[in-house]
Length: 330
Image 1 (cartoon, rainbow, N blue to C red):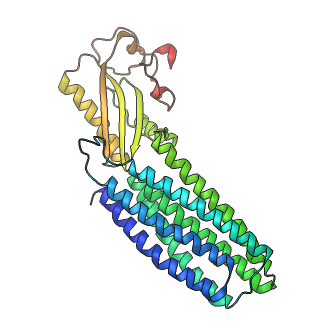
Image 2: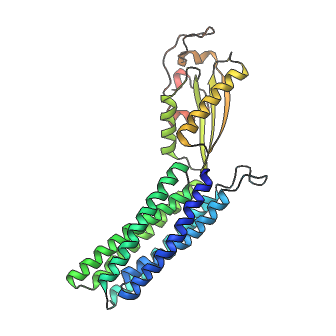
């Protein structure tokens, strides 16, 4: 099963299970009249809506590239995450409004024990589903699944906090605790929505993923081949679960076309092995120049003009430079 189809299947389960959990939470609110539980139920409406939106975006992202979308449809995931983040923020705002009203005019509560057990069950299911979503998202580089997983786990922690507040309320009898807990978690939900929107905008604007770049540079340094004299102008762009990598690879100038292509293939295979098969790589091969001798460790080179001085250790900063590294610029 390819990554896009796997992402789509996981999101189908997210949408279906979120719908069931929504009904359970509204049942808990019906029995208890707790605004904290209502807060959790309202947030779950967003879970369902976001699950459906995520499902649609992943179905779009899974479509093969066409003449209108030569890079594929992966950007749909970023739009999905942006909508989901907006919905989460809106839900948090509604939660804050309801919580403040309840704090001013507390409602009488009923059957708290039963309500606590119901929402506790939803928390366990949400956490397990969110954990699985994020594992698949990390493996497949899916922002839509990452947003869904983070959303589900946020829902889990908010539910856990709500349960703690209800238990404290039951022990103390202070009804105002219900409103205070709802206000606190309403603010937390708004903050979570902001973080998801921020990530999606970064993806839409092709913002550099520094963590991904650092990991890639580390892999390249540890697996460097002797014919890789230098690497520069490296750029990584995410299109949903697909990574597009562009770079310039400097190789000995006397390699023929087939030999140079083998070095490019080795570079591509290394990155695929570490970062997944959903990879498009465009490598421009440069022939080395006399100044490259000082940073080239190839011992059997018959064309060397200068003595080897030292190897350039690639970093996220210098590997992005649009120039070949020279002794005075490393």
